Image 1 (cartoon, rainbow, N blue to C red):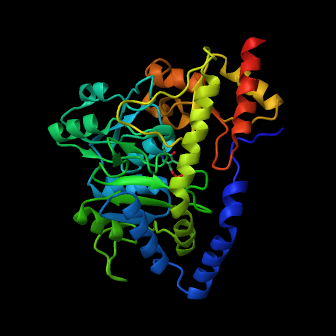
Image 2: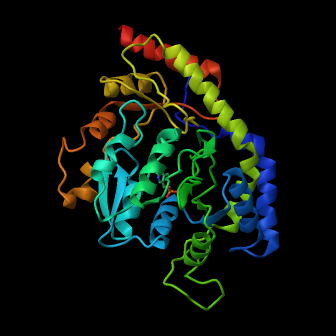
Image 3: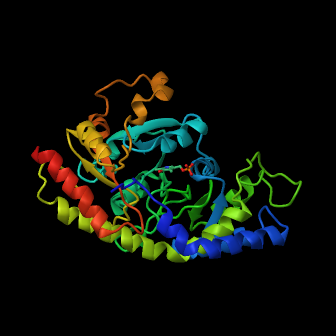
Length: 368
Ligand SMILES: *Cc1c(COP(=O)(O)O)cnc(C)c1O
């Protein structure tokens, strides 16, 4: 039996007719940029995310970058980021010219450790970017309390956690402006690049709406030096078809993760996901850790089971950030995660039998 890391088969079969109809609708509308489909999806996603507004943009990286830019963050400002994240979080800070200040995660949850944030704050600190990594909500009450105390902006990176909750509140609704991504493999995925910013602040929302469209509210009148980062009508129409399924798909992800947890409970050589109090996890990624990671991955590969490493190199050790002068050992928790993490197959439509097949192969590996 072949078990891929990710499969769109089941999702796509379910929505095929609706998606094709929506695409035809855009074609026939003869209005392809910033029209009714984008407006409608923005309304729907704002409701889903419990925020006053949602502004569609071209991708998740732009969502973060534009958020920072519109909050006035730039050269000379420090931004606190997790040492354990996808590189996009760091790139957004670099692109606005601000200084990265990495903070280590909690080794149990893999999310930024609020207890370590205050030590990283200086008079230049302007913002914190909590990343709800792999789909688990960060400890937002503690993070928001720190931001209030030190007068800092919070920009949530919600690319992996659409629909996750912290103390009953949606991720992407805590910060001043929050980015998310609809990259095809994300929990809510478009059929190409897409992203959005969510915010409860009307002023910030207006600025973002202008900034993503050349810094203009009225065509050919430019208030600021904006960018072209618009959500396509076509992607918006597709996302409107998929959004109503997101809760059901998230339930499936949670059930599959629970099944993994049960099946792997006796494999003591493996760390399975740990939830922090008050947080939910939407399992964008079901990640386990073992010191025998590379051998396990190869073993599963030989059995036809696909896995992925999220992520093999932490941002501070990437070639792209060599100029910052970090070396091995500077962020040991992030490095430990990078050396031991393995993401197992999980997608809406995956069966419990497939989970069991993966788990028995893992057991076999550790018993040999
Ligand atoms: C996917 C992702 C992004 C970037 O999204 P894109 O749409 O690919 O630009 C940012 N942060 C995290 C944590 C992500 O997983």
